Length: 558
Image 1 (cartoon, rainbow, N blue to C red):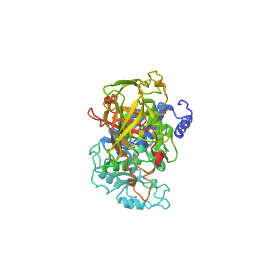
Image 2: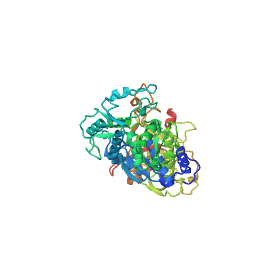
Image 3: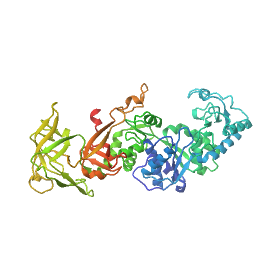
Image 4: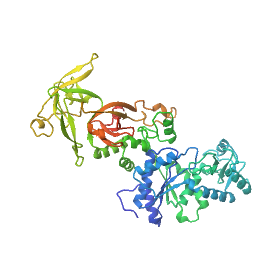
């Protein structure tokens, strides 16, 4: 058995109970079965962390199986992206499998069902089949083709396989019970005609198995012990078991399907169809746009594997659908970057400060720690000169006693540097402040040990030297939707809730040490938030993405 831990989720309780009832630990095997029809998102991360986490906990293999049964929507691009995401999260799969690996076996089993009188070819239209299935409270009616002979069904199914029928002309259905109280058991479709080239099998097949027929049988072939699915498949479990009843020869190798609630996140959408719509209509710049809830988008925005795995842990595994507040995800990344990201100086909305009593030709390098509150980060030299940039919001001509930043006649400390005092300011013809004039206390250098350096002032500001600052593009990302549940409005389209201010591109100035930053490097811009170097960066132009602000700016809005 696995090592004990303080608490188990209900899936682990099921596994522990199975082990206690005689299931061998050696037969435990799990799988993660994504369909390669889009990029994985934060909801899929819950399933990834659960299945691969079970593998780690029980020292059991976990297969990565691509559910590639719909060539109309699936692409190799998505296969590659999914593999990249799983590796980035820090997981390894035991075997890489594809549902298409089993097309021949699934076809043979379908022939078996036809020969046993348990499947038939139906030539009704999809609409006729839908109407004929009845409702949850009223029984369905039999298809006029339900009682075809076995020989006729075998012949028609072979013709389907040979491409002699057009798409939509016919399907293969299981013959179960058209009055069953579970709609999924009312003669479900097993195969349909799709004359599309498959990304792995090419044009070898023009009939493709449906998910329900493929899922359990693939689990059985791979000897999966526990098939963990999301909650919407709970009503499919009876069909999952019925299909297995038709092929399982060894009950000891029979997989067990169990369900957990999918992870929904506030202020976003999780439907791959809707995410694809955002990509195709240009609302976002691709699947890896940092506003997207995709794993690739979160990675580009600056999220770390550790933060996503921690988010999955603290969110837990539930039996009921719920919405997780995006603030929890933001907390997890802030918590991790607070421990790992070096703190640097960057000014996002600059205004010039001239230190009038600082010599014009003087420059000095000041020693600055990357993190004053933790060991192991080291330090770097930051240049200081007569002219610096500070944030516009950090200066006011007049302010009340609660404003502890720079104001006329008052002092503040510059981070790792000197204490300065605002003496005057210049304005343009519209009354906007364009420049601030200050004086500095030359004996107040941080860490110099002088009495002046120990002087206490209430405000500390970040800054960069004008002469040495590196101009950079900063992409300030906000939530993509302004509504907590954008796809939960029956009378409105989710696109109506797209936040028009989800991206602001600004020109900022950063300290010169960042000129050598590499793509993906992460930093805390002091007092402003966490940022990472975007993939668009080059030697000629630094581009940063805001991962998350230090404070939740939405708290005030809401």
